[in-house]
Length: 301
Image (cartoon, rainbow, N blue to C red; front, top):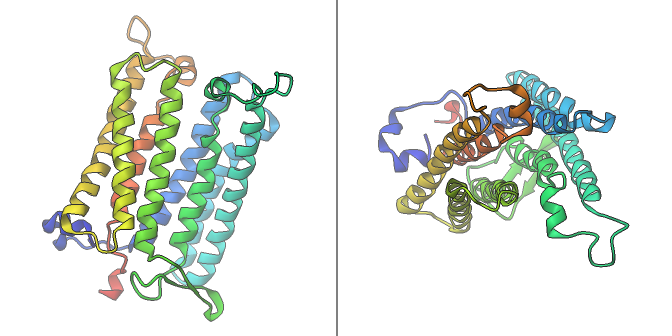
């Protein structure tokens, strides 16, 4: 179980059929699928989904399915599967970049006086800039996972055609830093959403503090050359806290969307507190724990 077993020694007896990169790729497929679902719910708020807004909605599930196909190809031809998956991730990168541009464009008020065309107040109520950016972040994570290290923690990636790429960091340290970036994006998105309510509910501070703690924990674990068991324990605690906050937040969002009679209405689920948003915290916590898995496959042990 890799470094996770350093924190929980009883996991040394557990053997997974997949290596860390393969688990990460499975998670990226699930993340892209759910991004499509989440985008559909977000774009449904206006009542009418524009033609261009269907791109991320359709791309998410399609990309998830294609990555599943890449996983099947990898059983016989790993390099071909890596190339196929990388093409999907490059497309995800493009979708994320275009979506971020369009969201930023809608946050600008050209007719406003100079200096007021783009303000914090407008940004709070504009389409979320970090939403489409998640497609790009998942793409970076997926490409990182697709190509194998020639030797564990060497930072030397084995590409196609005998090519090698020397990275400035080992894949494990890069994963920790990516978790920090993902968690920071999740934190900022949460703060922007909750700032619309002026943090009237004290529970809204919980994801803020948990996200900040997890971001710092992942950042410092990635910066440290050789994290100790204590460092890994703090990092693991931060990821478990993220998962707990995500589960609690999803429950609170469901309760917030109930009517006075306690009934749940689809319309309120779409336009009210977003149920899937807190689960992003849980997803980041899960990603953080996956990074601690053994990078070696079962055949290499």
